[in-house]
Picture 1: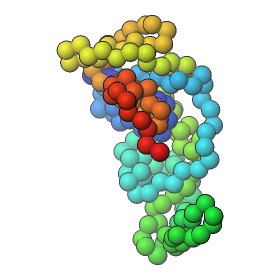
Picture 2: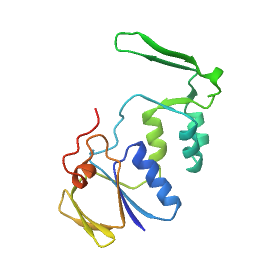
Picture 3: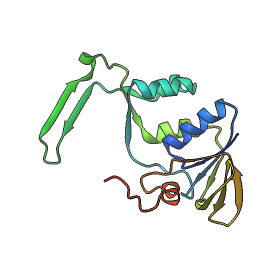
Picture 4: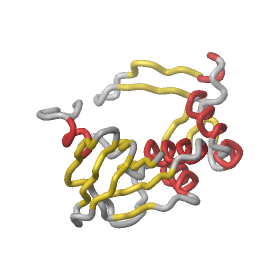
Length: 165
């Protein structure tokens, strides 16, 4: 099975690794011109840890992250909504890491085509013909849109869909 993943963020890279584990041929495209450090931190709970374990990356993530012992939620004006000592609710697996470090971990051994977007999608029988921004075309069995809140893939498939705000 040939899979195109549009987006080299945490979701797209994770999907690519899981597809490769199942023997699929995977191509990743990313609109950005190169890998860039974005965001600051990310917190992973137990479900995220299970995915990293399936990917064989949990041990490395554990050394690059720390336990996040507190969950503090507040409004823009500073009013505290929740202040929870995470260890008291049995969530010791909640860990915090730099987003950059997690993406770098997921990017290893990935071949990413930078500066590339999809211009057009066409369903042909059980396949999808993809036209890229350079007008090259390629046929895939599956196209996964992991290209963020302003998703090109979503906008090409669904008319008049606005991102959640």
